[in-house]
Each structure stands twice: as C-alpha cells, then as structure tokens.
Image (tube, rainbow, N blue to C red; front, top):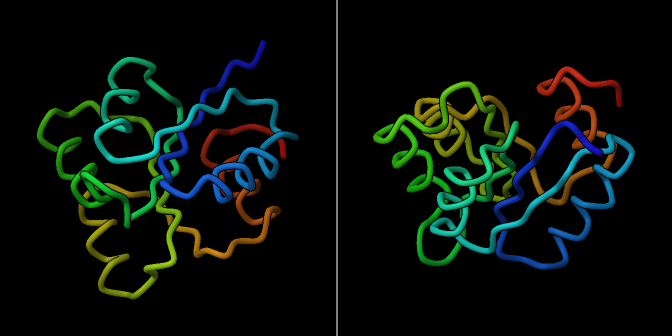
Length: 125
C-alpha cells in the first residue's frame, strides 16, 4: 500500500489523468479535487503529503486555497506545488508568499512533474 498521498486540485479532467499517469512510477496514492472548495475539504480530511494546486479553478481559485490554508494553518508541513498555465512572475511571487513551495508550468513534462514531487516527498523517482 502506498505510504504517500498526493492531492491533485485541478478542474480539467485530462490534466488530472496526465498527472496520475506521470506519478504512477512513484507508487503514491493520488486523490483528486475539481475545485478549490473540494481541495480544502480533502486537505482537512485526508491530510495529503503534497498538493498539486491549479490557480484557475471554479468556486475557489488556487490563491484562495492558499489564503485559507494560511488562516486555518492546516497546510503546515505539506508542500504545495502550483500546477498552472498562469506562470507569470507576479503570480508565482504571490503563490510563494502564500506558502507554495514550487511551481510547474502547464503543459508540463511528466518527468519534470515526477522529479519535483519525488524531491519534495523525499522518495526515489
């Protein structure tokens, strides 16, 4: 049974499937959220080891999720990686200021995603 859990908060089903495929070699449990509200619920209930968070989502965007985590302090030691096509310097600076550890630009290379996740989780890619 996998000992690490990764939450993918992404509204695009195809991207979620691509992330699942890219992360399969890590043998981690991957759970999914389709919007920011669902992501917050899963962060609280599942306590993932890492969150891949899209910025542009319905209901509550990625910045809103980061702000909520700062308020409720649930995000603590869990690394958050922004997985987004909104990769402007200003967006990335804001995400880092709110606690994001890294970012990956969509479209992404599967190896880059896998290596970033493995590094932050301390597992072998």
